[in-house]
Image 1 (cartoon, rainbow, N blue to C red):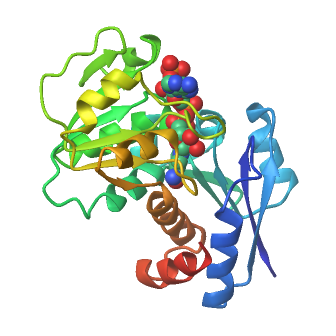
Image 2 (cartoon, protein in one colour):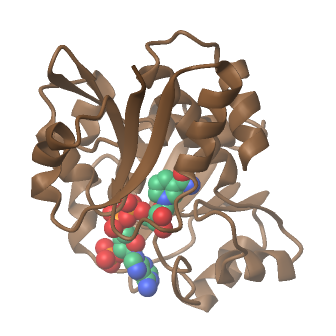
Amino acid sequence: MKELFTIFGNPINHSKSPLMHNSAFRGLGYNGCYTRYKLEDGSQLREKFFELNINGANITVPHKKEAFKACDWLDDFAKRVGAVNTIVKRDGKLYGYNTDALGFLKAIEEFKNAKRVLLLGAGGTAQATSAILKDAGYIVTILNRSAKRLEQYREFETYTFETFKITKRYDLIVNMTSAGLEDNILPSPKEILNSVIKDAQACIDIIYGKETPFLKLAKSMGVYIKDGSDMLLYQGVIAFRHFTHQKFSFDEVERYMREAI
Ligand code: NDP
């Protein structure tokens, strides 16, 4: 019987996940089908999951915290960061994982000598990513628009736009805000960006499929830029391997997903 998968989120039209997963199902000869589902009320996620009779799902903005609450079992990393983007159903129970941060870590492997990272934004993705970067030995600083969310980052050097001062050179500057996703806004004031970007090895935006104002600015300053496509790809490969119970290798799943995007 065909196994069904979906991505829950709102908005959901821009998502490339159906394309990627269906390409891998086809290429690998797995009897699966992946759709998209616009979910307005995240508290209904668990109910919808069973109602749609699906085998697994990805969860995107703004429901990753609700997805965390919806699970019966959580892997250690998802537990630590309080956010889930991948759910697999096994024996009627929901198993939750977070593959975003792992996907990001893999996406920055190419920057071999990078050590100091400035994360712009303090939302769900920044929270998971900062934890994994710290574990991997990076020195992470967080800069966020407002102070409230910074309370969760006690182990890190944190700033708001008002308190920011340069104490070091940052190798990587990463936009983890949603500024630039559906608007043309920079993630931080231009003066701050100008002062940090000029010394950076690379600027990365985790928004994918477009050159955001942040990437445009970095490019105009002659700094290497990278969008969120690789992160999207790798989080998808890891999720797919959970969906298919690690039946396929990372490389073979990556091949078909990369072809699709
Ligand atoms: P959250 O809603 O959890 O956090 C949003 C963050 O963005 C907050 O820090 C918020 O600051 C900040 N922000 C929002 N608007 C602005 C603005 N106009 N100016 C400055 N800061 C702003 O979002 P997520 O962490 O879930 O997602 C963030 C982005 O990452 C999204 O664009 C999402 O699409 C993308 N993403 C990409 C992935 C990929 O695979 N490539 C995977 C996961 C996410 P404040 O606290 O002040 O409100």
